[in-house]
Amino acid sequence: MPRLFSRITAATHRKTNSRSGKTMIFVLLCVLAGLAVMLLVSLLGPGGGGAATSHPWVGQQVPPAQLQPLLNVDTAIDTDSFAGKVTLVNFWGPWCGPCLMEFPELLEIRERYADEPDFQLIPISCDGRWMPGQAGLFEEGTEQLKHDSQLILAQYNSDLPVYVDMNANLRQELAKTARQFGYPTNFLVGRDGKVSAVWVGYGGDLAPISKAIGVELKSGQE
Image 1 (cartoon, rainbow, N blue to C red):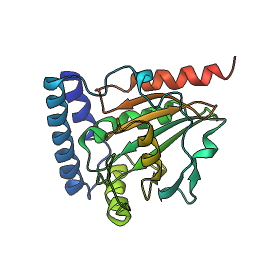
Image 2 (cartoon, rainbow, N blue to C red):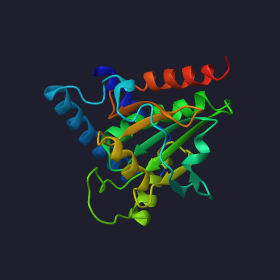
Image 3 (cartoon, one colour):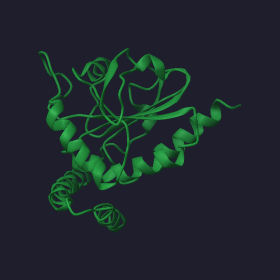
Image 4 (cartoon, rainbow, N blue to C red):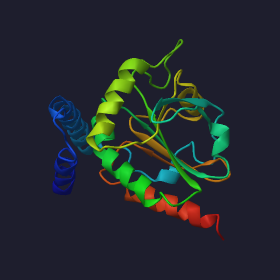
């Protein structure tokens, strides 16, 4: 836990500018909320720290869905295009404390594999209103979501491309297999277009995700 606090403190002090005061308060409040959630999880039992390959999504083909551009990208992307690449999909939200705690590590993963043409990171920003089993039509509140997501990216001067699952089509299709979902959720897709690992929640370290990406990339070179 001390290591986690030090990481959070360092992350919240990176690359600020004259307009960052209100944003820093916003981020800090989200992070504090995330710490409270993580403390509760640690008291009640394990959360997303289980075996990444034991999730019911593993081995399933990624459902067909189109993700719309939100920030730093102009065109939509279809999940069908994941085939042939190693893809890390990250469901997160600018309101989500645990998401913000893992965000610096996601940027580090992006940097680490920046020279790997077969790897892609697909962050999907969510406003948090959709959850598995939700009935009726759904649409993300993109105007506010875009604004809040940009505030987070600005803290790191990041040009990370961010997408939106506008009507939760991808999440709904995944939930048909299993409703084990939360924010954040990361899942890794192999070159065959199938889910190879899933991480629900933030366990304080994304090293297992980074390692799994490396393993997937090497497997296609053998």
